[in-house]
Image 1 (cartoon, rainbow, N blue to C red):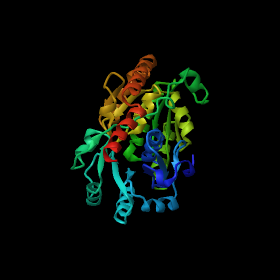
Image 2 (image 1 turned 135 degrees about the vertical axis):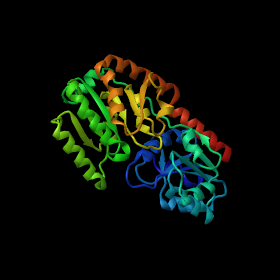
Image 3 (image 1 turned 90 degrees about the horizontal axis):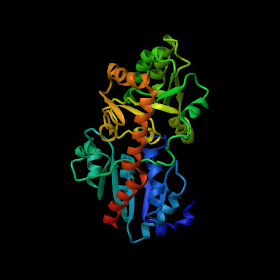
Image 4 (image 1 turned 180 degrees about the vertical axis):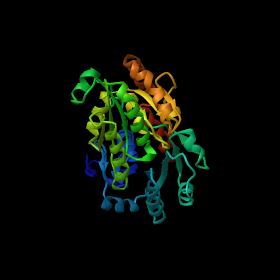
Length: 348
């Protein structure tokens, strides 16, 4: 869909994505923006635009200055808030919205930018507690049609060509913050005792993290598990979705996190969850029901949580089925979009 399908003068919502590198923020934006485009005349400004939403360029943005009715500018990063504040200061008729997933004290510049917003959304109560102003709490949602269990998980895994019968995965950028080292160490201890399992890590390795990733690879090779612990790097989103369907167990090993979108993606695909208490894990995971919660950075606790599930994959499959049901009931993308729309309606 192009901007010619949604003339600039008719726009109600601009979704800025002012970040060149694909990230979790971009992923959440890409999922919910097409849903919002069904409710408001919307356009995406920046790279990585999803289908089913118009694109707006700089020339279209410049033309918006002359209109009288307001346009919502929904930022998710500091640079997007800065651009929104500057444009409004120069006469653009913008209503500014910011979504915060951070679970930490904000810098002075972020606090100042937040004070300039017309509405604030937080992805959890914890995130809201750091904002120092009223926020509407709206958890992230997941597209439960795209992220769905396979017809046959065993066949889905067999198509990968990897050894064993079951997959255990940890997705996200390879770095200490994500607990990639915690996952690798747990796998080095467990996989020799569970020959039916293969571990996969999917996510980008940035240049500054290449040394960290190399150390992980050396640890894997030292245990002789290089064919069963695979650091697969970044891949197209469609391929990532297929890998979710191959997992029996998903490990969320972050030491700290904003929300942790991979958690609800994995649960929608029907994987059992073993998650550190970071980000929104305690909101998403019902401990002992659809997953198991562990302390962040604790290898021993992760090993203890995984052992029973790896010993009894049928139990893990049952837990994954309950995870899927919770995702469909509580974390649907449609529900997230409608709640965001309610915030927009209050503004315009």
